[in-house]
Length: 315
Length: 206
Image 1: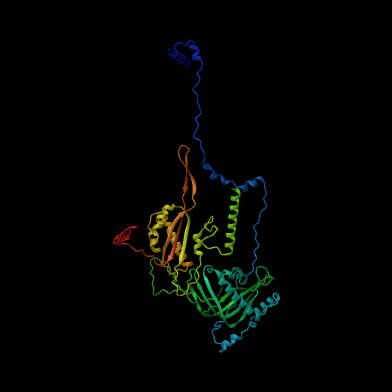
Image 2: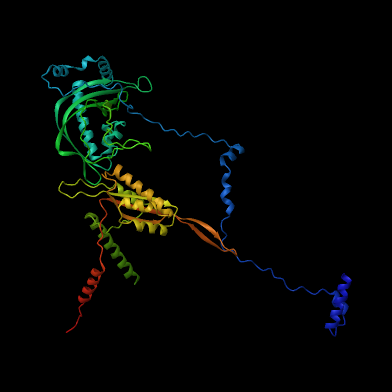
């Protein structure tokens, strides 16, 4: 095949080139190929980030370190928590039925008035324990002190003075007092005290470890107060500012006895089961009706709105 | 010239410091403030509008209507497409708005309906609104969220940056029936036009 190509080439050159003496030489001489310049592709001024990078992060630096033999000390995230108050009320005081409802001249009334804390042995024991740790404690002066704490705490609540409130009220009572009140205006005033406050109950529970003593003292307070709560827009939600109401309350004051810097703080309130219903909110509230099955119909006449059971609860 | 420049500069500085000193003694007026009190890097001011507390009203004052601000951030939808729905429900009562959105075929309608129902529940629970139907949409608008950027590959090594769009949606519910806009008839408009033509005066005339 090469020979035939040569012959054809020779014929071509004989025809084209007239005065070519070196015909054979020209066939053997290699003509230079036309100049081939490498053509550049379009220069990419921006290379987009590679698509495969997304799946690359599966390697665990921890696993690699462990394989390499590098030992890292375990860092325990510990934060010491100081518990300064108990979680609830231990052995709550059950106020006698009809307290402050009966007139003091009747037999029942006299009995209630003369009922003293001496009757309860457990309370006496608790008071003795409290006196061990806090020598200045006395039931006579403590009741006045409790009333002062109560008044100061509620004043701080109206001002929403967080620091003062924390110093007058335990951590358990604080959220109960302030939940939902952040964006409301509360106007409260203590008009007068109808009866001198009395210590009615005392307990000294210990939490977690033996010897970690907390003292809880219940004080009975009968007073006149005014309360008005305004919502975020300044509209009256509850109560009235001019009309005072008689209030009978059982306050629980607590102190961490072991702690030398512990203070007597408001821990909660007891609401007896026979307490009269509170005033309704100035608003109509939707009470969800009964859950009906598809074949049932709602009978307006036979349906009674369920009322909550009258149970003592402490707040 | 340099000395003069420096002198004027010094006097300028002195006057400035004088201004600062004198006005620090007196309380600066609210309108001028040298502090940039606008938006910070991540300002969620719409949510903070719900935390404003008004002082208690006097009994003779008219009852202030409750205002509830609610929003949803980073909705996977276009702000322009959301705008159409937001514009539709402006000024409607809440029941009407919810009904319209329920039967609208757009993707944003479902999300918007959820936001409105959330806001209604919030109003009744936390903002002391008495009747849940007694609300109307006072403000409703959408805005641009943070977009994710992706690459859209074209031919010949060209590319475009593709945006994965997100939007925010804001709504303000106010207690009370929706405000009635006066419907102007054609006759009224014509009368107004004629009156406007009659009120024209020619100045510098005899």
